[in-house]
Structure formats: structure tokens, C-alpha cells
Image 1 (tube, rainbow, N blue to C red):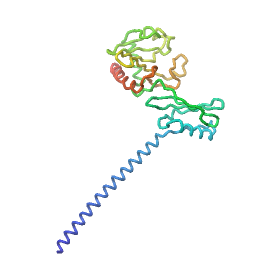
Image 2: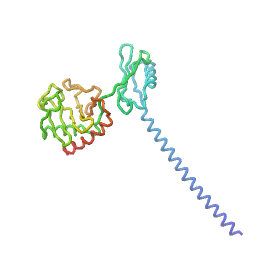
Image 3: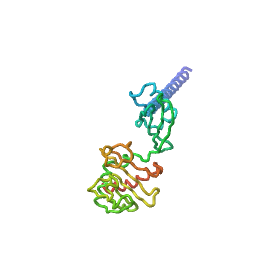
Length: 263
């Protein structure tokens, strides 16, 4: 009887140890999940729209402008680094870039002297930064490769005898940085700041890759696409309002082939 009681006691002790171990593991897992959620929430918090500090505007007016922006914009889709306010007489123009239906727009809200809404609107930005796909150094190397190994061919009525290279199923041309001031595309007269890809079997057929070099924005001779562009960056232009997401995906294959030639 004593032996049976001892065995039973030992069994219950083992069961309790097993349950204690199970609950310890469960608590560790729950704590780990809670920590993960906390980290995730902190990360999300860092992505929130941050209004910049602006001392040139009355703080009460600026607070009202913030309320107006929160009402008329989806701040989750806005780029706070592009937020700017311009004074125009007794009114203000509040401007910021942001996304609507996966396309990048320039948003504007007009407010009165008290920061109250007057009107608002948006315009599609006809370009996108693709420096992460085509680096500045690779752009310059591709340009030099075409000038050295290509020929001349006119592809549009704006220029004559553009530098040209055939990559098989697609063709590439260079446009002069000073526009029609170098209508004959003379390398001695100016540099080239656009790589034009033409694929007759693609939609769209043309892809314009534009470089903004250091000093370009202050150089009056250089043709400016948009002064909001940043220097030392590469942009894909969208003059015909195509879907920039599709264009960005499609242009990668052409860039890969061009880059492979310079390696």
C-alpha cells in the first residue's frame, strides 16, 4: 500500500513538472509574440507622416493647416519629405507629393490667412526616380558605349542623327542635354542626358531615361523636365501618362541588357 502511494505520488509530481514546463514554454512564446507586436507597432509609428517644423508661419495658422491637410489628404500615402508651404499674399499654397491609385501625384491645397481650406487639387507627376534600377555611373557608361560603338540615326523630328545603338530587338538613342540648341547631336557641342529606348513590339514603344547631373538645376543651358527633380538621380519620364508601375517593371529588362554590354 505504501509502495502504491509512493508510485502515485511520484507520478503526480512528474505530471506537475510536465505541466509546469509546458506553461513556462507557453509564457515564453506569448512574451515573444508581444515583443514582436511591440516592435512592429514602433516601426509603423516611424512611418507616420511628420509635419516639418516651420517657424516662418504663425503657430496657430500652421496648426489649422495641419488639420486641413489631415482632412483632405490621406497622409498614409503622402511623402512628408516633399511637404512645403508657400505664401501668396494673404493666402498659402500647401504642397506635397503622394500616391493615389498607385500613381505619384503633386497635391496642392489652397488655404486662407487662417489656414482654412479654399480649394485643392492634384496633378500626375510625369516621371519616377529609378536610380535604384539604373545607377548614375551605369547611365554614363551606357552613354559612352553608344557613342563609341554605335552609329547615327534620326528617330524623331526634334533632332538629326542621334547617337544610336541596336541591341537586337530594341534600339537606343541619345538626346542632347541642351535640346534643339544641339539639333544635330554634336558631342562637341553638348553632353547627352537622355537615353531613349525604342521597342516596336512593346506598349509603350518608347522609354525615356533622364539623368539630372550635379549642377544641372543651376545651369540655364540644360533643359529642365521639372525643377522638383533632384540632382545625381535617374528618372523614367512619362509624357504620355502611361502606367508608371508597368513602365518601371518593363524597363528593367532593357536596362539589364544595356548594363551587360558595359561589364
